[in-house]
Image (tube, rainbow, N blue to C red; front, side, top):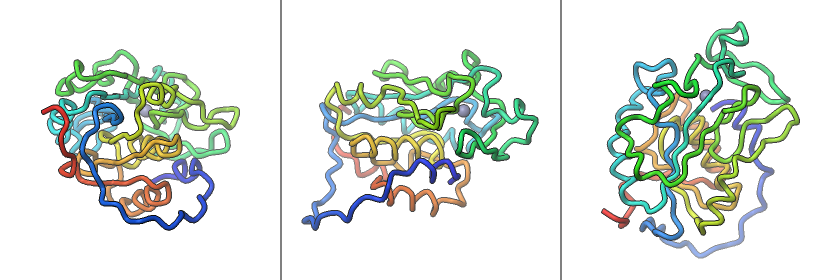
Length: 240
Ligand SMILES: [Zn+2]
């Protein structure tokens, strides 16, 4: 996990009240649950410029799960060709990190340029199931990992994408998060969802990481942000 994710953490919360332990119920609630499918795009799949190992292996199970939720939100990384996160624009090597707007920006190979085939949704993802589509990283000078907020901008703020308000307006209270990559866009989205007052559960088997060997760091951040991560096999019900 990178410095950026640390930097965006909320202040430590107060000690939780003593609560009676409730068994977790992952029965899909059509009115109040949403499935968030993050960045299932060819550029992040094996063979793409920013390939996440095994990213292609989660396409089919995510496609199947999309049939069970009445509201599916999908995100697409969608950058202008001169995007600030591209190492090629900075004269640096991919995966270098640079200071930017008081935070740290990882530099990436050119990826997900708006309108290209690599930025399209993977053909195995059923577009007819998507109720809300969020394209992010569309401004040249700001990256955006999260579905909910852009990375830190020139003014030191993280601008909203508007997704939180849309979900609130529809009565959504819980989001299950899957897609790519666990340690970046999935992780940021889940932490932001929780910070926005939603319950966020990362579906562990339906995501893959850029840096799988740093899993403990990601999990520690999830624990700190009260984000659960569970296997999708715990989900019950939904339209099958
Ligand atoms: Zn990107």
